[in-house]
Length: 363
Ligand SMILES: NC(=O)c1ccc[n+]([C@@H]2O[C@H](COP(=O)([O-])OP(=O)(O)OC[C@H]3O[C@@H](n4cnc5c(N)ncnc54)[C@H](O)[C@@H]3O)[C@@H](O)[C@H]2O)c1
Image 1 (cartoon, rainbow, N blue to C red):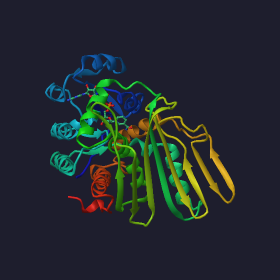
Image 2: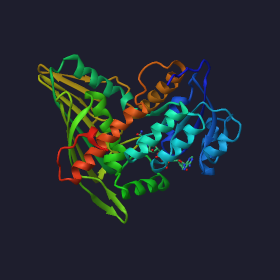
Image 3: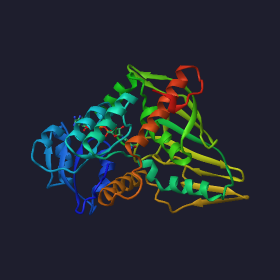
Image 4: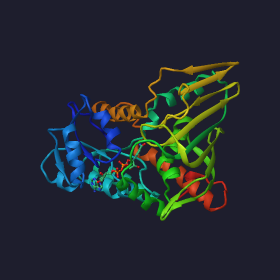
């Protein structure tokens, strides 16, 4: 499709004003590229809570009410509960809005196709944001791997520990739809938060040709099952292998301004390694990136390693993109389907006892 950039600030609406609004909003506050014209959420409490951020914006209980209000909207920031993504996105593309939606895109390939078809039919842009791709330490990690300073890339490792103590409050209502997702086999660690890890794998080393997985389950309470321990390994088309281990540590306190997720990315090269020590939480109190080569360890002490900054930069990239049409969307709808395929390949492999699955062969 031909996209014509806006020669004026984009008129935007927030759809969903829950927990993650607190971080997505950072891109919009103070941006010259946008005018926020509407706030949508069925919760009156949420609408009242967010209105002071945008005193001139009108509030609505549903996207349909906004669409029939006569207010002109160019683009929406879609922060809906994941189970509502597919239907919500199809509906809003039908209103003629460009969409920047939160991950996970949706739960299966048929929903994804429905969303891509709707974008095509309406000639609108569907972006599935991934803030991790805008986290400065991960950018420097990628640059370290590409620069040759650690030699030829030999493999990499990602670690993620979900801990039960610390961090910001997550309202029970935000957790309720996660329970629904768990019951559909789309767990909170592998699929919801894990979406980002799979996304960084594709972003770092490109397409994946084989995935092998062993996804476990920990029953932590009535109706609450967490998809850990889990181990997922894969091989990229370029031959680089990755491994991702997911662990649950219910009683571990993790200092965090956000979720209690202790994360690591480590790329091993033929003559050294580069490692991101933390992201969402403040686990390891060393520089967020360390690069070891030739007997020397270099620590990056001055990176913008506040996880919230990645939301700001991802959102600003989108708003700028709407004004210029320049650069990759990170991710387009089609690229997000590759992330979905990677997750679905992990599930298929685990269900078959760990057999290798090619994500592109899934239908
Ligand atoms: N990028 C990240 O790291 C990250 C982190 C957390 C959440 N998320 C994603 O963000 C999305 C939202 O998560 P959250 O934690 O903010 O959830 P939440 O439950 O806190 O917020 C969702 C909001 O949507 C509202 N809502 C429900 N139905 C609606 C409708 N039909 N129209 C408009 N609003 C509606 C709810 O009232 C609620 O206020 C999910 O897709 C989640 O996976 C991403």
